[in-house]
Length: 301
Image (cartoon, rainbow, N blue to C red; front, top):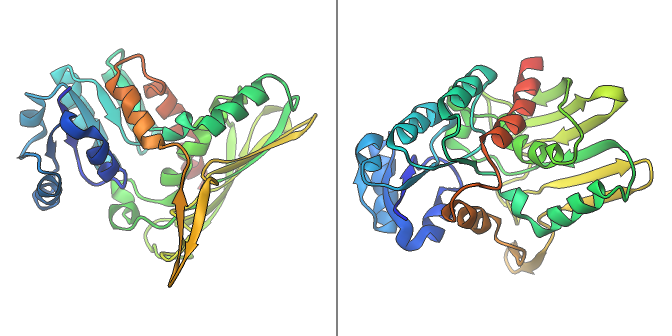
């Protein structure tokens, strides 16, 4: 399969380049300097337009800044090429609705790699089997380092809420907890960012007094031994299940500490699912339903 990379802005783009191997066809980026650098790094052609690249590609992975997703999705739909799109799919509710109308039944996968965690799938199985009874509330965290560059620019889709709400939201959406009806947000600029929030504690309200709390802060310093975390403490009326999706690691300390992971490669599992063709594990609706949590939080601010 000849796979095009549309946009080289997202932090996951290097993983896609590394795992695609002979499937990698070419790259486009609206910033020719950035696009040329990554094309040279991985030895693939750089195209000066998305349309010319998609003229010869079989499928596309969209890794641009979030603000460009809609126009690149339109190019892929017109070319009839399946899409793997980084999250969040859309910056706001209105754009999400337009993308939904644009895509319709077109093959579309949202980049939600945590779905492929064997740990998570075991947790989900236990919760859905009724092991801890009726869920009363969930405490979640998705901490990370500040990604910098465009993630710190509001107009491009930056901010910790858009970046670090979606993964936890998607996992919780699978538990039959329903959609949040309101959000209360405490946010600030504690770390590196000045234009967008880099720290946020969100409480999502659900019917019947149930709730989810989520710390979606870029609170990990540059020297932190790993990128961050994703944890959930799921409280039911019969028990509690806790999940820490990136706990499988070994600490190695010399001048500095470093964590080496030995858990499943979730990005590779995501990409393998995309390359195998539809139906995909995570579709457009999964992405938009997870995005909606972030939109609700931002709207409440």
